[in-house]
Length: 505
Ligand code: ADQ
Image (cartoon, rainbow, N blue to C red; front, top):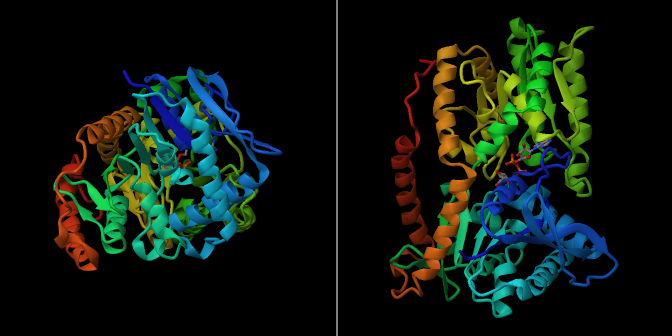
């Protein structure tokens, strides 16, 4: 079997039961590497006075990792700068927070070149290379420049922005052109794929080959949807562990005679935490009978604290929490608990299970694994209700959740009321359908589908037929939009696994 080389910005396999923060990407990649031979390559998380390119090898929880240190200026320009100061906000539709600084772009290009130069000597014929996320768009191109001809795929964990937003980025064409040096590019949902194709057709004058591959910049590649999922078995093990059960008991005792609503995410403006607090406030305002009977626990550890846009979120959330608690609290009760720290994943599983409502309401999110974890942790006989933002990639699959628009406080308040008062039979119906989807689209399905599509794309050889010329340009995009919309409409009933009674009817 060929080796799999996974490349991502940070290399941090989550240690079993470890305290280290485990992002969705880390959890998913570690699960993928345990079953393939190969290694995980990326930044060690350390900075050095000068870049040496020395690769350090180690084993973490059965995964071989190869890491390089970066220079301090790399860290500032590439990581804090271009990746998290420019691309992250732009790709989450926040052009108001997007920093366009020439030095950031230069640092980003430099680190991608350095990664490629350190990685290239480790690649053997027959290896399959899988690059992850927005930190590394140009890596495939850099590897090709160094003569690497192996199959290389790229998966984007975050949304892809609409062309109208992407074109605000200086040198946006170079970024998209870089993607045409991969054999396969994967997106979380049809919506992000659709936005990417719109750019390729409308801005880059590209088109489709007859076999469905995309052609632009004189190159051909395949773009496809691969929704990421959980390592369901590992999560079930965590949820059944002693720590999870102990945490559940502790939280359930705490929530006796009261219902707990839970939110869990990194402290990030894309996750909609302020809007969520305002929605909860509105719920208390509109439903006096619920006051004192419900509390909302928000677990949100600090992330990317060196990036300016992240620095004042905590202050604003503290102020909002204080306001709601002073308005609706009592001598012995606070309706909002805001906890700014990481928890072990087994503890989180216990907290999820004790919560009557999982409130997952990002303003924009590639997929969102917390939504899936919340569902996977529930008691099948008496499950809680998932309230999910329509702007999370997960909402394209998890249609049996209570879907909300997080920008509307009224809608959030109504959704909370509906979730907290939902009859057991309906909760069970919804949960069964959601859990079936979580199982069906787990991390193994995601990994295997991507790796086999990457190999198949390479085996299919060069495209023999020219692109369909009629689909080029903005006129082509209009026709394409209509066709895609019809396709999405047609797919919806197939995605839904049950028809729910409409409680509002
Ligand atoms: P993230 O933005 O990190 O991931 P998400 O998918 O929700 O978002 O994953 C978060 C992970 O971190 C979950 O596994 C969760 O359990 C864990 N976590 C969150 N808060 C924690 C805490 N306080 N303590 C410990 N663990 C915590 C990016 C994209 C997503 C995409 C994933 C995977 O932004 O849209 O779903 O990659 O592709």
